[in-house]
Image 1 (cartoon, helix red, strand yellow):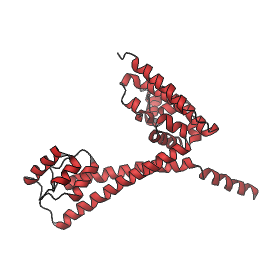
Image 2 (image 1 turned 90 degrees about the vertical axis):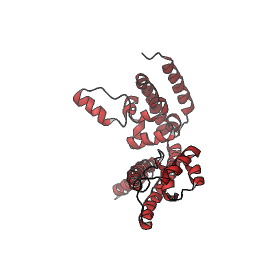
Image 3 (image 1 turned 180 degrees about the vertical axis):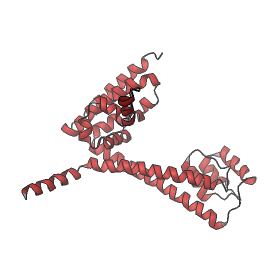
Image 4 (image 1 turned 90 degrees about the horizontal axis):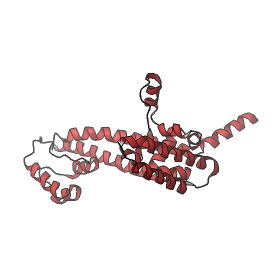
Length: 258
């Protein structure tokens, strides 16, 4: 009986860890993005039957106009607020000679309802991202400071917990999220991946291709140290780690890329 109670207590302690919430939050944001992207693709094709000339690269603005815009009597002030003066005039003119079909009120309302739901998904994403940032700064302040909150959350979620991330060597942190490419390298002897999730860090994603490997190693090393501090000591050492990483970034950028 004592053994069973100890096991239950251990499970409750494990489930109470805040980084488990972080894992689910990251997953929820990913699921939300997939659903929103899929529905927006459908909406853009559907709305094109009505107003094919309305082409906007920002999905949220497209949805706003799909909900509010009257193609037969376009509100210039609405267009001006959403897309700016030049586009507002362009869409106002195109609405006059549109190739789109005339929809019944109930048909148009169905399209607008879908656009409203997609806007709600965008609002949900923003809310979840705000919660994720708060949670990751609380559970792993060092990794969050060094890697930026969104990336830190993804790394912890992929590892499974901050303790599991802390047990990983820097070389594993560097390719975390690139497991398929790593498996292909081991099986077919293709080139090994130079980075996984940490490619999303702006210093790496915007760097020349030949510098990305060095930058990835430098960042992974600092993240590995930061994770150990978060998991085992609770000491905040991230300011020095980030400063050291910045020095390394500057040194790599100063190198001549052939």
